[in-house]
Each structure stands twice: as C-alpha cells, then as structure tokens.
Amino acid sequence: QVQLVESGGGSVQSGGSLTVSCVISGFTYRELSMGWFRQAPGKEREAFAEREGVAGIDSKGTTNYADSVKGRFTISQDDAKNTLYLQMNNLKPEDTAVYYCAAESSTYLLLTPEFFSYWGQGTQVTVAE
Image (cartoon, rainbow, N blue to C red; front, side, top):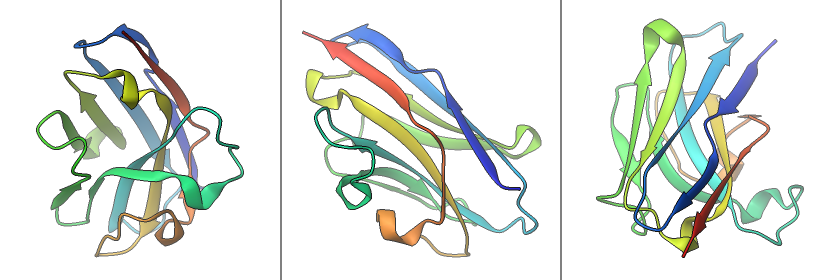
C-alpha cells in the first residue's frame, strides 16, 4: 500500500525558514517523480485541481520550481530514508498554505496535480507578517 506522510509544518515569521518532509513507502518501482504542492487558505481540500505546483523532481533528479519560489525553496530527496524534503527560506505571508507531497511512478515530471496519483494528507505552513 502506497503511503505518503508529511511532517514539519508550522508557524514562522516572515523571512524565516522551514523544512517539510514526506516519507514515501509502498512503491514497487523505484523510478518515481515527486512533487510538492500547496493549497491556499479558504480552498477546500477536495478542490484538487486548485493545488499549486511548487517544486518537483523527476526520477533522474532534475528539479523544477514555480516562479514564485525560485531561489527560495529547494526540493531534495534522501533515497536511503525514502524521504522527500522541501527547504523553504525567506518565507513570505503569501506562502501560507497547506503543503502536500505527491508521487507518481514515472520517469518524467509534470508539475500539475492531475499528473500525480498518490498524495499525502498535507501539513500546514503559516507565515506571519
């Protein structure tokens, strides 16, 4: 059974840093593409298509970022720990959202919610002024 479990969310002041993590288990194939998405406050969790792609990494380690986070966020993975990370620096109030990790058995990456079959439950990140 595939499971994605996020952790590490919390509250931080504007300009601060947070790292969120996602432990991924249950995949048969090792070629995974993975991503981080976020959903802004006031959006229903069921509004799947409204999740914004923040960062992604394909099975070869090539990364992709939304323009709004380039230079501030870094996606990385630790294969030994089956863990995906999102390091977030210089956080802004507009980064406040529920952050979700996602995974798909694929050698390529599309940073859109429709591409991914497997999702975590989300972790809240709040950035105060």
